[in-house]
Image (cartoon, rainbow, N blue to C red):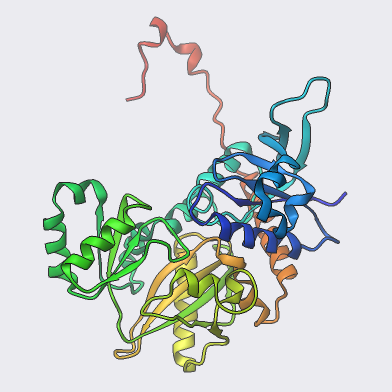
Length: 390
């Protein structure tokens, strides 16, 4: 019997619709000769659904009808499989609807790409594709990512950060600190978000204030970076694990303004998904620069402990020649399949390799010891008041 791969998409995230597009691309890309595929849609309010009609994107135009024709489920881990049970349970029926042998998360942003779903799957003891909990947490938090990279000698642009609680207490002090260190213009971003949502450029104190307020709608942590004005953006996709990795063809995404925005990413070209972005592929850059970007991509991938396929975005200062790591996307839009196709790897082969990497990691984890046998509880007395952890 072919292993059953559950492709998870949607989710409680402002990138919900983007995730539907990417998720269904993966559903149709997985090799049906090797795997059975079960689409698992998570609604904006957190309900899980399965059903045959969830595999076609046009059905999502009438979402209420689609969900009425699908089955709401809840998960339960059992011996390396994720069981999905009907919600609410029906009397006199078998409420076990599906068993998943591996989960393939394609949920962008919060509650999916940030380690939360990965943590649930770890607790359930189920193999899953892509980055593990720690790599997902680091990759999602732009402030944490840049702190880690900077501390390990990976070039990143100068930046400042703030929490919205501190902003509301003393915004004047934060503006003064940012102006003093970074000057203008700056790029303001929510620390935990993707798809260029909530990002804006500020060239004055009033614009900075407005930009922070805007980003603060999406995340309580804000990252402010010095803007590279003579900018070329280059993206690299890396596939592998901690030990070995490879880099696909590099691309230069084309932008309509000073920074790459949501419309540039998802509303360009003629097809759906980030695969439709207007781009130069392969990027027309000198070989030495391409080699430097590939090396930094592999170092960044290894440093955060990534696995599966990711996309790492770079900023090139065309005036100075400096190269900076901008961010890592641990579940990139469309899984960056277009970069791998340009490297001779089909979308189907890409998903197969990501699944195999996940199963290898799961087997390795199975060799570790997670439970320590002791008679500690039998030695306790006084109703548990003594012998507490010190």
